[in-house]
Length: 52
Image 1 (tube, rainbow, N blue to C red):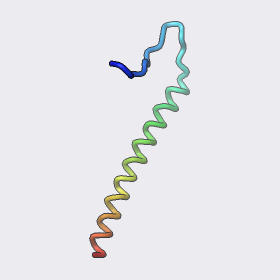
Image 2 (spheres, rainbow, N blue to C red):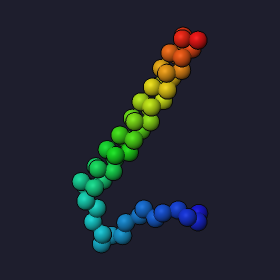
Image 3 (cartoon, rainbow, N blue to C red):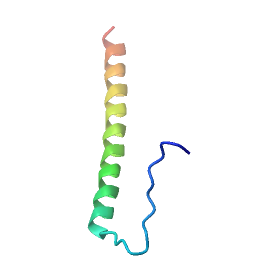
């Protein structure tokens, strides 16, 4: 596909485990933040519905 970033590493390149871990944690935090924002939005909608 055009525009896809290449994520494969060549045999002579080394991957730092700390970078892999940091990437995984960061994506996990992003998913958790998005989940929290959805929940907060639902709570706000419920509160608004009760005050109408």
